[in-house]
Length: 195
Ligand SMILES: CC(C)(COP(=O)(O)OP(=O)(O)OC[C@H]1O[C@@H](n2cnc3c(N)ncnc32)[C@H](O)[C@@H]1OP(=O)(O)O)[C@@H](O)C(=O)NCCC(=O)NCCS
View 1 (cartoon, rainbow, N blue to C red):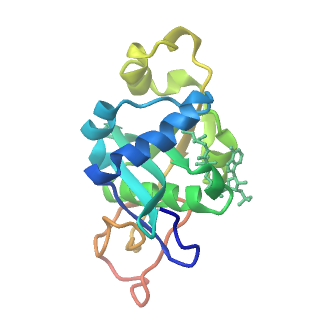
View 2: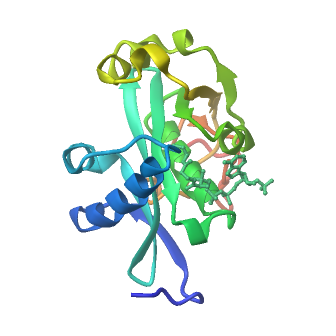
């Protein structure tokens, strides 16, 4: 089905019905070595990590926020359809994932990526892999590229928030967050009020 270009794009939590489209988007890029492949099992097991971008019933992109430790989460498997690249959709997905990190009170978010420029636009900076031991001694141990990882580690420190309520993400309606990414959204009329 072709999406209507006029229909709005919704960013929402993924459902089991989205998994085959998400797998196709991710694994088509993985075949070109630009991101890691994911199995159906990995997507089902981590389904609640994922947001999708949908227009007119068509999945245009996806991305996940995976909690790694008490102070750390990872943005992973973020991708948009090739014909949707460069339209700001990746940024929208990433910003909503960072909003979720704030709502979970996670002060640091990282990504392992071949597209460091994209994450740099969001305020991430490059770090050495050994600055992320929970990742390296967790997921990475079972990765075939463990001794020859060529992905770049990018890290973002979220800023503490005292007076901002996040309402951009689909899971965040009306809920307060204590950390924010570089793109806070203040709720109309709520500035200065404690949540
Ligand atoms: C990376 C990806 C998700 C970005 O999504 P997108 O919708 O194309 O990106 P946006 O349009 O939101 O771009 C936001 C900004 O990041 C920049 N950007 C996007 N991809 C970039 C890349 N690979 N390298 C450097 N900068 C990049 C854009 O130029 C834009 O900057 P601008 O505002 O100054 O023009 C998308 O290109 C994609 O699906 N790539 C293949 C899969 C992949 O590599 N995923 C990331 C690793 S897990």
